[in-house]
Image (cartoon, one colour):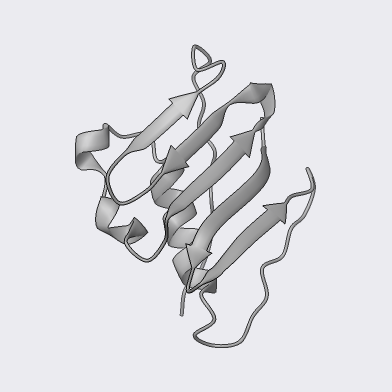
Length: 101
């Protein structure tokens, strides 16, 4: 299973659609452009914890993040809630590795 698409709505006034490859994907930008913010939001949205343990304040700067996975699973999160739809009977864990200096 892998992430097929990420869409962030209204991040600093812009929509951010990103269709990912199954292999390697690279997120490049200047300092302060939001790379780490995007990775933190993504990590929190797919985190395998109860919704009550999520840091939903992380999503305050956006309207919504939508993450499409293989197996027709869609995760939506905003500053108020997170929802997971699709073939959610499948237990999934998606490791995300990033280094923020």
